[in-house]
Structure formats: structure tokens, C-alpha cells
Length: 231
Image 1 (cartoon, rainbow, N blue to C red):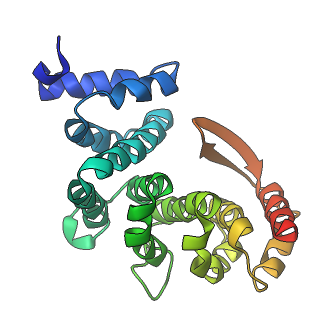
Image 2: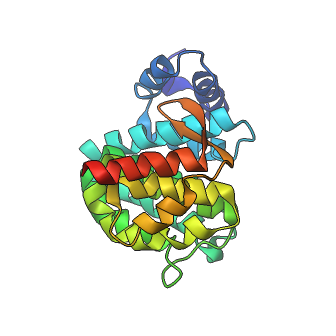
């Protein structure tokens, strides 16, 4: 069956099969050979998957798909970025699961879109901005800031001070994500917060390069401090 002749259901099933593939790198390569604008909706639907592997692979795939769309049709890519933003708006009636992470993944892969939308991503962790008060969405926004901090630090340097309160959070996942995000962009005021966390034994799982890796908050703080000292 040719890709262009697939029904919406068949395309969704095909995308799910590729997201569940044992070799996701190969699966992603196949996704990128499908009609890109048509795979966006199926990928959006999998952001709500209860299977963490499917959800995070959908985030990764959206990053690649939207970046590729932007190469030939920048306005269509902007429409998708605005869709992420709308999903995080209270007026949308939705929750926006996976949207901050997907925005960040797109921007990590596409500098033009990073320049245009990074300030919105940062605003999601800013109490004076478009602050997300749901803990899971906060985790997603912090992961997003961290993804950019580790890939395009120059664009999120202004977010450094916003990370400090999260390092004081009662939620160990927020503490760990903030520490992870802080390393490449830390300023003088960030270091004391990181030092406080170096003995924090709470565990969290980070997704990166199709891997789920467990870290203690203390380990992430120590790695962040090492990055600061090496700058």
C-alpha cells in the first residue's frame, strides 16, 4: 500500500508501529519519509499515550517532523508551533500534555523556530509569565528549558534565575530537572542552589536520545556544578 493511499486510521496505526519499533532510529527515518504534514496529527495524539516510550518518541518525532516541514514551508511549521501553544492555553479546554517538550524538541533542531518561540517556552516557568501551575506540565516545561540549555544555551540564558525556585521545590522531579537545566546556563546566583542539592538522593528518570536514565537529584546537581566550573 502506498503511503499516500493510507486512510487516517491506517496512517495512525503505521506511526504507532514505528514509534514502538525496536530500532527507533530506523522507525523515525521511515516516519520522515511519510507525508510529513499528515503524520502531525497522529503524533499529537500519541503525546497523551500512557506508554512513556511511545509518548517520548512522539515528542522526538515531532521535533524532527516539524523541523523538516520548516525547511520547505516555514509558515506551516509556525502553525504547528502555535498549536502547541494553544493546547497549553486555558481557553483550549485541553491539558497540553507533551506540548512544552515538543516545542523544545523542535527548537533544539531548528534555530529559526528557536529564535521565534523560545521566549514563550521560558514564560511557562515564569510566575510573571504564562506560568503553568500543573506539576506535570511544569516538569515538561523544565525538561524543555533543559533540552535547549544543553543544545542552544545562548537562547535560554535568561531563564537561569527562574530555575532557582524549582530547585527548592518539594517535588524531587522538579528539583532534578531544574538542576539538569541549570548547568549550561548557570549564573552566580544559581551555584548556591546547586550546592544545596549535591547530597539529595531522590531519584528521577530523564529521557534523552531514546533512553530513559535514572539519576539522583544530587548527581544532576554535581554534574551541573562541574559544567559551571568548566565554563
